[in-house]
Image (cartoon, rainbow, N blue to C red):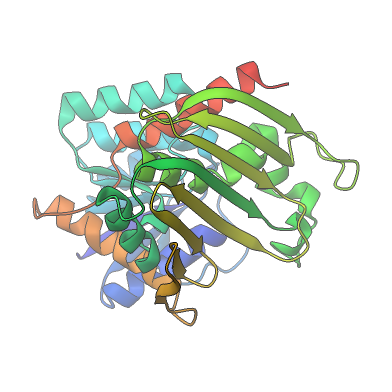
Length: 321
């Protein structure tokens, strides 16, 4: 790689710029803000500012990471896809099914490599869990309990949480889109989920115009029940899942990067590496995407798969109490 670009100036864009420079120390890295404005602040790990997608295309960049707010993903990525420039789109891929379909159509017409940034699939415990469930390590699956909670004002302490993307519906905020990792890996691990019921709430505590709590009841294709809880309220970050089957139970702690198996005979830790550097997920994701570009074996998240999450969120918003 000799010339790459990152669209967006938020925290995740900053991480991607730093990681690209780490992977390719000599790369020329161009930056574009989501709006195309020229930033007044200093931009780290940047070799130049452009103000339009057309300028990126004219610069002959070899890879672009689209890390702008999700409602802008389609308008930023589709011209790149049409120009044949490999594009890694941050999660969620879009906020509407129409935009997701437009991206898929561009990919079908032009064959450009495109991946979606659901990095939790690169967490070692996630990959081990996938193998365990695929191999029916706990027999027939009956129930899955998936929960994440983290206090929104603690996400970016230096900034008023009410002004961040997470709190702004027009920028793709709300618990459903901001915490969509859980909906993505649930369908990666369990297959497409059929929505049965959902409750969306906004607490008085945060006073947001978007949902800060979501409780979702779904069914897997085999009839297992999967409950998903998302919130912006828990003062101590919590991210855990449990899978209950006919032969035992697996508990997954994503923060501790740990898997525990409980059977009638014993309870044992199958994997635990709490000190593992979480940035390795992002590095692995970019490296995997380069494998895709080079037509090598890869595990990139396809837009078709990521669109399942957009579709599920659309159904939840339509049917929720």
